[in-house]
Image (cartoon, rainbow, N blue to C red; front, top):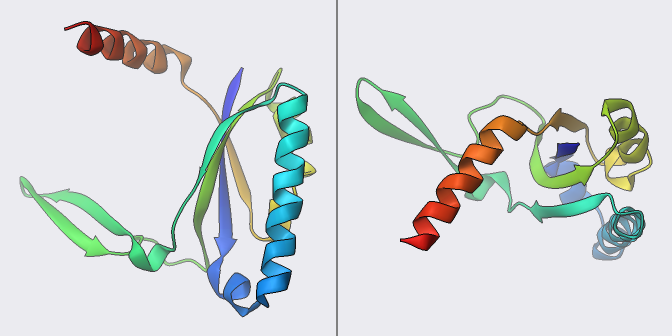
Length: 130
């Protein structure tokens, strides 16, 4: 099964680290990602830029409202996503519990919606075939 792991980060805590300490933390995360790759569990992922550079879109009265940054009042912001292959949720939890990124902020793990993703893949194939 596929799982989407949403990694959150306390941006202020990370910004307060020395460049060497920040690089060391990233290397630890990359090394564990390599372990996931070797085990056939790492499907992909994306790091996200700082939340201060984000915008949030919200539909309101038939219009689109744009606000700066994420629309949540929280210390941690979404820092990246990791796509994981695991047998079940317990296996996904076991794999991600060892990820050094958990020390920087929480990870939310959700199963991918295989039904909707199959529909998306069909539409992708149709559009590319046009």
